[in-house]
Structures are given as C-alpha cells and as structure tokens.
Length: 152
Image (cartoon, rainbow, N blue to C red; front, side, top):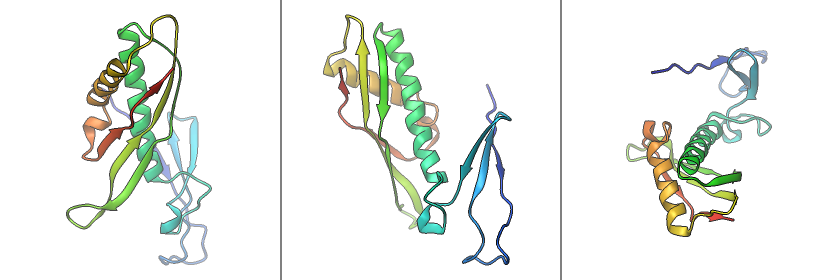
C-alpha cells in the first residue's frame, strides 16, 4: 500500500577501524529534511547523547500506538487534548539466546477534553483496539503491554 524510507549515513571518524575504536555516531535522514543524530547504545560503545536503534524501536511502537489510539478515540466520539507516554523497552535474550527487545511497556497518560470521557473499561477497550490496529505492533514479535490507563 505504501513505502516508508529512511537513509542511514555513517562515516568513519576514528584513526583506525577496530571494534574498540570505530565511531558509532551516524545520522537517520527522513523525507529529505529531517535529520536525527543517532548512535549505538552506550553499552555497545555508543553515545548516550543520541538515540539508538533500540530507542527508535520503542519510540516507533509508542508513536504508532498513540496515533492509532487518537484515531480510535476520534471515531468513538471522544476528544483527546493531550497524550504522553513514557514507554520502556527491555533488551533481553530471546529463546534462541539472542539479544532482542523482548518487551515494550507503554505507559500512556491521556487528558480528555469535552463533556464525554471514557470510563476505565472503555479506555481499556480503546487501547486494545489501538494495539491490534497499530501497524508497527502488527509487524513485530515483541510483547507489547499497556499499563492501566490514566485518563482525565
């Protein structure tokens, strides 16, 4: 149905090229104009000052869930004024002994506007629908859980 592209650009800045010395900083370029400085995670000799691929994976899942949740809320007649999430991904060994983001916990905090506000069961139903319709969640094996929603 559609294509989605990212350009990844890396150039060596170290004097030599060994596992211990090569630089991990690089760029993610999107849609020609958006450039994000990125790196490996610090535990893999990267910079803590830049997002790493694992951060991006977690952000992608959380962002997709949010965008799908907003669509679900709008279609059900609820007004969302603000949505924040403090998502956490867990890099762990999988059944094959390989490192993988095994679990992602979403912790959305939603502020609803207008007269109509969802009760706890409706809110849980909306999150369930968003999770099952999220393109990214449908693309991965990672377990994604959503903490009990707090909406006001």
